[in-house]
Length: 224
Image 1 (tube, rainbow, N blue to C red):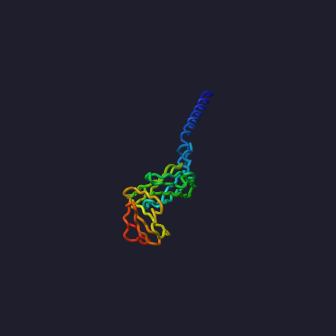
Image 2: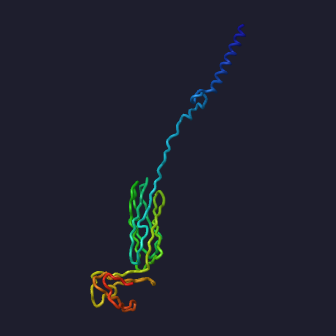
Image 3: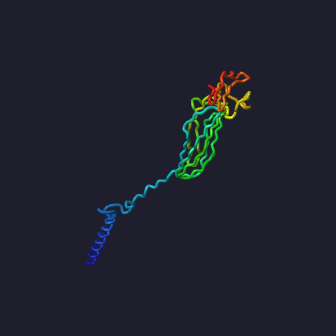
């Protein structure tokens, strides 16, 4: 009798253990309905989309185009706009003929985030410099930590030079060798003389460069 009772108790304990083991496989965690993963990973919401602003700057130049003649200069304004960036930006010009003189002042600017800073580009074309009758593209190149940027402009230079007779030159036996100066032009360039004086002048030369004008050139007139 004792042996049979012990067997029944042992059998009941084995069935209870089996039921507990089965209960571990059918979990009730993970939301309504009972089933699901009990790790809790599905309950963690995704975080906000954190975007990092990239530092940058923009380069522009004005005017976009210019027209002039030999013996003149043109001034441009270079603007640098910064976004999420503060620091130095180096500026340099490229594309001009070797006979021109191009300077940028200052050659390096310090920008601040959200601000604009400007520099001045001065292009000097000498009287005996290269003409650019079809237009010459000039590039302004910038170098900074976020990378390189560039902007372009265009300048047209007619193959002619205008020499002014300044106001106050006055009358006299001879005005004299273009007021004592030496003018050099390239072969093929056109020389024009502008009478900016208040009295008339008659142009001629002793070396045969000019034919003696038959009539006096009135104030405000220019040779053609």
